[in-house]
Length: 234
Image (cartoon, rainbow, N blue to C red; front, top):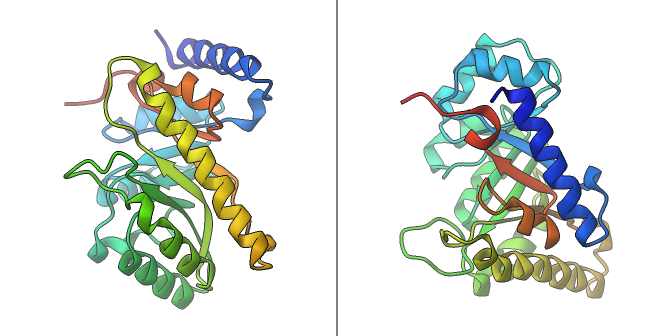
């Protein structure tokens, strides 16, 4: 199927999932996961109206940005970010979805401050505490979040939730529901500390196999790869 047909099908599924819980489909943004996709495919996706592109690999993403002319595109870094790559990512990507430790947050802040900008980030939470998987433990989230609130070069938009891999989408629901609950708890703490201007509202969660469940549990950004853009290059 073409990207146009894929997009139409996905938009219909977003509409249906939103209607189940009384949400407006416009609340859900698609990040087209464009890692290892050709520049031709990305250009096609842009021409069909997609504006948000997610990349995992720094040099690949920057090369694409420099080669393509996509004036309205916004780029999302969604992979694990190494500290030595921060200077290459800050300012090149509108959003960083995978911030999971204080040292990384502080380095992003330093680079962003030097550049005179505020970098938008999501805090990635490893709710299942899976070994070898990125994301901060839930028990440490509060301290990371409140450190971020105090940093001038950081704008914390919300949380990124990646549940354990499961064949059935419903298996991800408890993790997505917990993500929404954590957003509410963090905002409640901000209110108690007279910091309501720092409210967060975004949830980056849901991929090809479970995005409908994620939408029902409050996702505002869903990350879709081959289901949208087709198979990637080997």
